[in-house]
Image 1: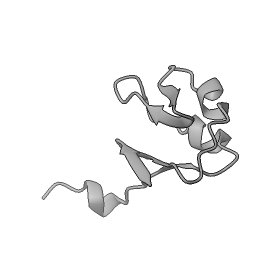
Image 2 (image 1 turned 135 degrees about the horizontal axis):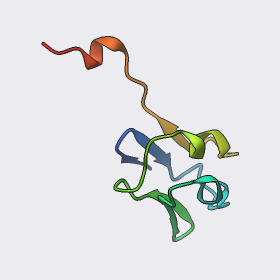
Image 3 (image 1 turned 180 degrees about the horizontal axis):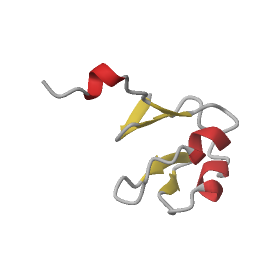
Image 4 (image 1 turned 60 degrees about the horizontal axis):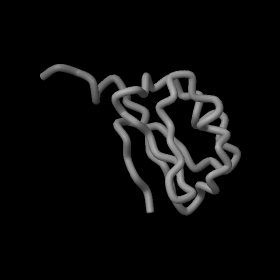
Length: 72
């Protein structure tokens, strides 16, 4: 099961609750609950450190292309 937190997505099937993401988060936006990571979106600054440090590739971010951000 995948859960979205803003542009960050966590795949619960891949998350092992290893706390690498929690330890690397500078804003303390990550919590581990029932063995799975979760993001406090009011604290997250979307720096990408959590998904770069996840050894199981459980955390990802949705990339936007310029056309997605264009004003119509």
